[in-house]
Image (cartoon, protein in one colour):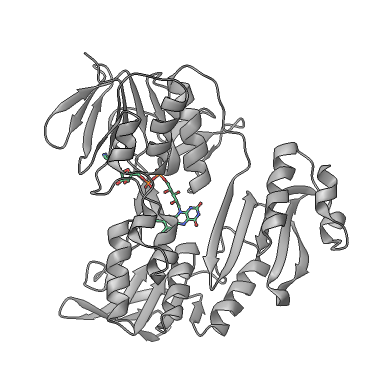
Length: 405
Ligand SMILES: Cc1cc2nc3c(=O)[nH]c(=O)nc-3n(C[C@H](O)[C@H](O)[C@H](O)COP(=O)(O)OP(=O)(O)OC[C@H]3O[C@@H](n4cnc5c(N)ncnc54)[C@H](O)[C@@H]3O)c2cc1C
């Protein structure tokens, strides 16, 4: 007898698939299997409110096992899925048992990229992916004064901001010549450089880390190629993540920077879907795109659940994301890679502005700082396919909302 639909990974995407299956009317067995000890929880506060002590562990929880049981969703924690036998439609679990499935959702998320350097496993060196990581960092920061962050991306900068709020001495080492170089325009990078500097963090750009210095297996400092040395009681390595694709790869599914899926989250195996950080979506031009965000985990999870039930529900909304640093909220919509023009709307000094990114006059995306209404307008532009021209975007006297009516 089959165990119905099995979901591997009890994160946001996995939870979304489980609940969407019920919402779509599926009445068979659903089992959500995760290798962490915790029921599904929110990750974004781990580098923001939770680290600051403003968000409690209880507030991180998305659903308890009891809440899921009410929807007849079985939650199995502390369990690793070791292998998929696609022919037999069975899974091998870490306790040696097997489960059979009619439908399988792979929501295995991602893991931290580690520093390929001696000392990366010393005490005081952290990455931030899980609740346990965030707890350990918070504890270590309480007992420390000097934090060094390697990597000036969102997570590194959010931790830096939280540590400054706690009065710690903070240094951020970024290899590129500006912060968040992959995702924002120089004007936003420069704004955040100034923001961190004003708040007392030292930002070092063009920093090539050459060596970790430690004593008795504990981090003490970080050296850069130019001979500088930065004291570190705590080192946060924020150099990105890698999708967890090995399970799917060993089962012979297509991998290309992620588990390859279509717009509905389907793999080439009709019984298997994938969603969230682990999934790379094949685009109409043949390229693939993998996103790492709450919205993607939720929307792709819903599409994948529908696909398991034979329904065509592609995920079409424009991507959005946010970051909180020093009480300021940056919200992004669209994908801005390849822009050739950035239009600033509003005043950087007011800490309330937007950047509109264009390529050949076509709007690619909008980053809004402390402009929630403008961000929501931005999402509507992409939903409706109505886009302000660069001239309209630059005209602060024009209410952009009026373009939508
Ligand atoms: C600190 C932090 C801050 C973030 N901030 C933001 C933000 O501000 N905005 C935003 O949009 N996004 C943010 N994100 C990203 C967002 O949280 C992720 O994109 C989202 O959680 C992805 O969900 P997921 O379910 O795909 O993966 P995950 O949440 O990683 O869940 C996957 C789960 O599957 C488990 N697993 C993997 N392999 C197996 C296996 N073989 N067997 C069993 N279990 C397995 C993993 O351990 C994990 O528990 C942040 C992430 C982090 C870590």
